[in-house]
Length: 94
Image: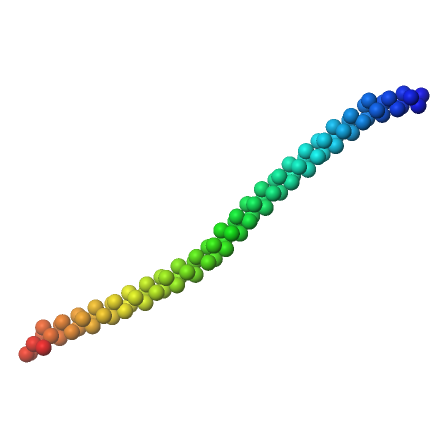
């Protein structure tokens, strides 16, 4: 009877456990690959957000500088307009 149990264990149970172990290993490997892909995606997203975090303040500074330049240009053109108007409407002309 012991010999029959040993044969059942050796010929049926051992291959079945090996198949189960292989399937489990494959599943864990797939989980690891998925986890790695998720990690790469999250790292890329973090890098993109960090780049935006740097770019947006720089853009804001550039637009502010543009606004200051535009205001200065507007002031200069207004002064020029006042000068031209004064010189053409004064009697005698400047």
